[in-house]
Amino acid sequence: MGKYLFLYLKTGGGHLAPAKAVAEKIRTKRRLDIEVNLIDGLSESNLLVKKVIEDGYKNAINRAAWTFEFLYALHKIRVVSRFTAFLVSYFVKPGIEKQILETIPKKIVVFHFFLIKPVFEILNENNLNIPVITVVTDPFTAHPMWFLQKDQNYVVFSDILKEKCIERGIDKSSLHVFPFVLDSKFSQKVTDFKRIHIRKKLGFEIDSRIILIMGGGEGMPHGKKILKNIIASNMDAEIAIVCGKNQKLYDKAIKLKNKYGIDNLKVYGFIDFVHSLVCISDVVITKCGASTSMEILIMGKVPVINNYIWEQEKGNMEFVCQNKMGILEKNTKTLPDILHRLLTDNNYYNSIKNNIKNASLSNGVEKVSDYILKFE
Image 1: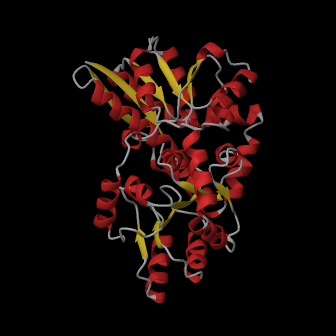
Image 2: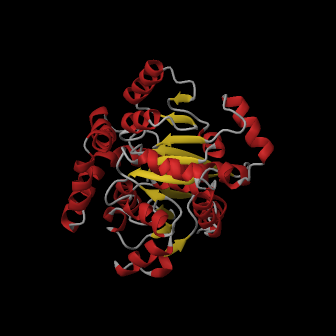
Image 3: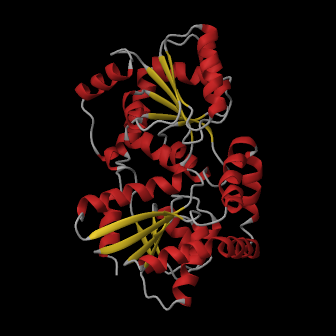
């Protein structure tokens, strides 16, 4: 039986989600002759290193996004990127080496830029001729550290990024473009009958308009302000907010629900039925993470972007807004006006829906899994 190692880090869901989706698809295709092992690149590292990398990312994003944005900009300086790659590799390399030497996998697929340097060093030092594929999980504006080592086999999710890579001096023959990867369930059309069933199951009215507030695994930045302003607008719609692992946001949302006695508000923590909520929603207020944005668009729903990380998520925002598939509104006070127009002006709402439909977006999980299986 051939073994594949899929290496990721828990720095946001954007790295793990594509890895899980492709792994599951390969398992479905080749259950008997392929074993896919999903490996957290920090699983063998000491707790301090894990805390610095994982918690440092979460705290920067949720509490002081400017620090993440500053570090992102700083890493455009090549010497800074190389130093960070060296430092991270020093700490994570022993654990990854243990995993590789114990497994001797048939292929390695990397889903995080921090893991590129240690993987290639391990293979070189141990004279292992194992094919490596690097899946760049940022579809439009990718972190500079993805490209420190140019002689890699890349999977990228847009022609826009491919052109940027070529400008960086990467051979175009090493770049393979596919649609963005999502869980296989986002490839399946949902019937009206199924939508009604989901509404009933989750406790929503059959024919109500639904506003979903969702920002990924760490919850929606400024979620309390957004929710409070929507509640104050007395909008004729049901509201759902997904707080993810953000317990503070969850507690604040529950407090608002109880304070105002709101029956049309549903508050969720970290859940595994986001697909169902997106499916029945009319408008999704979100931040512009790659996976979340693509899930919303592929489901044909209208995203209202209230937040994005400069510069990592800037390309995602531009893709949505420049193609008129959604709206950017960073002011939480004026969000209700945007929502009111979307839910009452059918021509306006349908024009955005048509733009999403005409973009003909698709889920790349099938094609990417096939590419990995055939890659030598």
